[in-house]
Image 1: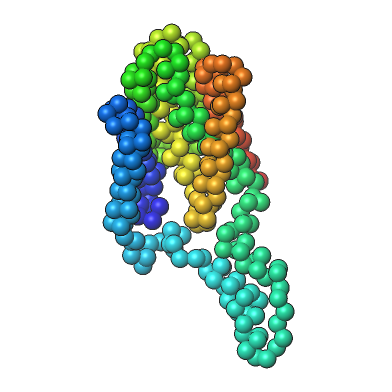
Image 2 (image 1 turned 180 degrees about the horizontal axis):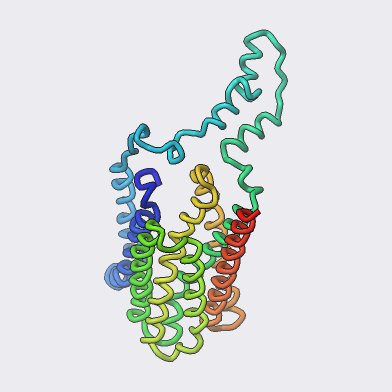
Length: 314
């Protein structure tokens, strides 16, 4: 958002493509490391790989703020600064009153107001933001459930460890395609983000609901994983685009809340997937439930779009 405000959808999808590359490469690599070094040493090597985050983070440099449009600046908005200034009656005002000799009492309400403004908690009461937060929670459930049981299903169906690990590679290849390809038509105005998001959710739902019908064929399971990967490769990056469209210049705090709801969804998704598998004894019903969740997300985004259209008409 800071570096590419006019091509955000494409830049966001391209930057997130690294995760799908890892999803394609790491499962077979990890299987090889475990076979050679055992679990403990293989996990130690994975931890060493993760230290590359430190190097990548050290290479990042903030862009010159003066060249950014005001709505994309990382500097707190003027309203927040003014509310925290002496005129607002906030913390600084209390200190000034003490210096003037006036008796200032501890006001818990001022603390709460200051924290709400810093975290932009007012946004939590906006209907569109509530809907997008629910969608983000459901998307987190998809993220956790799909990645968690893609490989174990192949093992349970008897395809073997190595072919089952490559199911993640097929899913990652599809996700890579989705993440790289979806941004350009959105940035150029050829399709709305809400429309593409809804279509992708429906494709993801349909492909996962077909899972019980294709469990006897490895090729069919791999094809479903690829199609689901393409759809999810569009769904996940578009959450950031939808959040930007809903919140406008308040996107920085909104993205923080987005990760909160996404994380809650991942926790719920893993627990739900495990419960469904323990209840039914088969992974295919986990994937059917993924289809139901994706269809619910499409319905919520469609309702959000209708709300915006109705409010604009009025």
